[in-house]
Image 1 (cartoon, helix red, strand yellow):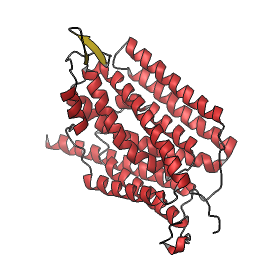
Image 2 (cartoon, rainbow, N blue to C red):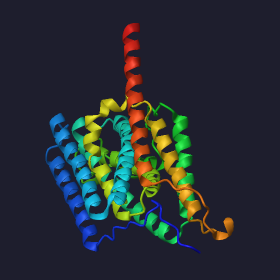
Image 3 (cartoon, rainbow, N blue to C red):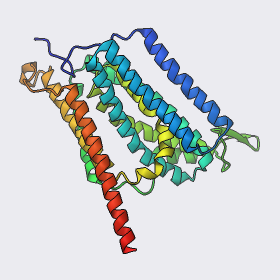
Image 4 (tube, helix red, strand yellow):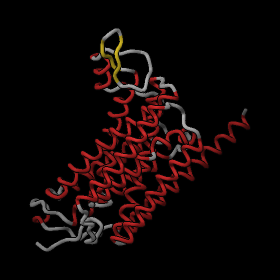
Length: 341
């Protein structure tokens, strides 16, 4: 059987050394630990200046990292990183809708929301790290997994498209959350601790319950985001760094554009188009590298594959149109509401 090109229709590979993995994970862990300590010492709602400085740093770091990839490993892999980062960032913004609902459902005081978000982000990073490792192992050993990834993304896209412009107005607790609340003794007193003592007994705090809710939500979103980014790059190192950069600034984004999120009325539709596009890309790649014996006698199909430059352009266009159309509709509705008023 003749050799077939990889997902990006190129043979570029980073050959990341173990020390680079350790350094990357170490830096990310150090930043998270610093954040946790600083937030625990002074729980508060961050100012606009704090948010802007931190978000500018994270976005600038992601852009600089992509430039380093370009200079060290070529434009192909740099394009894969930027495409993956933008996709993960857009999916993370959709997470914020659910985060807002969870915070409202549990009545989290503003000064404790940073702590809850920080723990939620840590859980998201750990979960995605596990999914990245599992996904990489599956891809390396089973090429047909791209059929599953592609079909799952198309199914998710259809589900998102059916939701249309609306997001659920109330957060519904899942079975795990109901079990936690029934099983463990708890206190009503808010603090930055997850577990505390009350009347000599250990009890979980409201913050623990909120973090558990955020964590189970992160698990569901990881099921979408990891197949999506593996549709853009097969480099586990780029998958990891794209997720890290997308999640690192999520806490700041939550406070900075919380009001703006309600104006992104077409976000679900835009993400549906984006996930469907990546799903089709994955299916085409699966057909191109087909090794299932009951399809075409185990030979690859002669189908076109979508280059990473086209993918990156499509992502930018889809997200740009989604944002512009959403803001235009929100302003039009605001004007109509004012005139009727």
